[in-house]
Image (cartoon, rainbow, N blue to C red; front, side):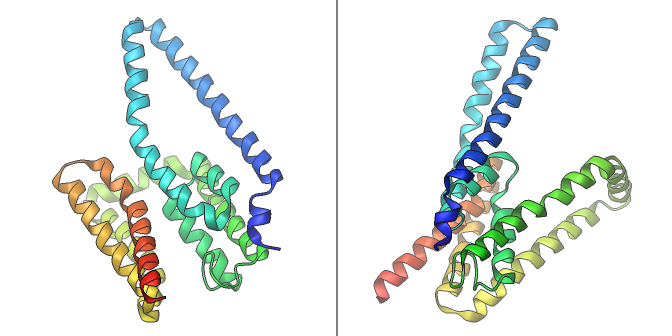
Length: 237
């Protein structure tokens, strides 16, 4: 059985629909609470309406990046899982990296590549899902203490946090990019194009002082790499 048959099953659509319905209900409750409190504090209705319009407008741009990420994951993981993950707590970078780890550890050549069976798909999904649980548990029990500790360390050495986080990210990217560079061919092309694209987007974000543009860097990089590989494949076919 093709993994997408299971990935796009009615049961998963129903589960995600229930999940997102809960999110919509929570958002509506918080909205009503915030509006009620604003009125209690004497904020004018006109001001509240303006804030609502501004928030709705400014949320469009970040949502585009999520949609691009959704388009990237759907062909491999199916609509329900991709939709549910990116709509609630997911991050495109996390989802791709974790799903790829789950796929390779289960015996596939990569995410959506040779050997990506229903079992491998399930392993990727479980890795994505279980992988976020420690964060929630640790945040609940240890976030306050962690923030206090980080604040003390960064107060003594503000460079430390940047070096620590940067080292982790470099190690993660190297783990996936170095094998592709060594493999050459389409893998190398994808890495090169995505790296150049991300660099250009980040430079534009800095030069134009449009910090929101940086949110698109990964999505644009993936799409540019896909287009480059498709063009090369079509030319050499």
